[in-house]
Length: 268
Image (cartoon, rainbow, N blue to C red; front, side):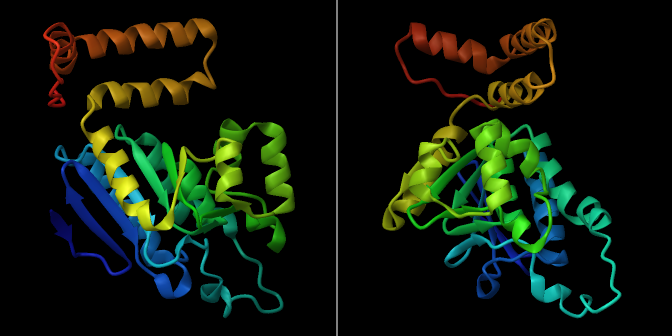
């Protein structure tokens, strides 16, 4: 296992092709501030470039995934006459992080160990997979402070649970506990707290053993499908399949099937 120590508010470890990014501000429920968002974006970019990394896992230290924006950082600003420029703040700090997740060719897993609220919820929704602890909770809290969902929540949430459910969750700001999250398709699985880390490791390790180029191409196709016509999507599938068919992993997969053995994918 390798550990990256050049960060102050996150921790990064890599083992067996799985790169785990842990948000590490447990005293404030891993609330976002400028340094943590910057480090998250830097770490995601580095993991995407690293050929030894096949899967990225994002989780939180302590009892929360992330409670969203650290409102304590705003206390000094919110005085009479203050007019916040929240759009610029999103573009500079939050959006780059979300774009890194969606643009990465590697699968990104949110290991939601506790509350995921506001932008913390958005971060989890932006990931390709969500595994929830029994203590996890998802809350689109923006409406409670007179704001709209951001960090791509209005893009990801309807795709996961449908327009009607997304509208209800965004406009009421009510908490969604882990079992309901599973029922409505917000998460892939719910795991008992004492088995959570093992379940995340097993899931991520299994993903890391699959052909990475095929997974990356699949991610691209699914993202593109919402904006493509049927004809455009068929064309995109044909191009992607042609690309995947030229990989050594495709040859290995077919050969292993014919030889009745477990394939060993190399990423080539």
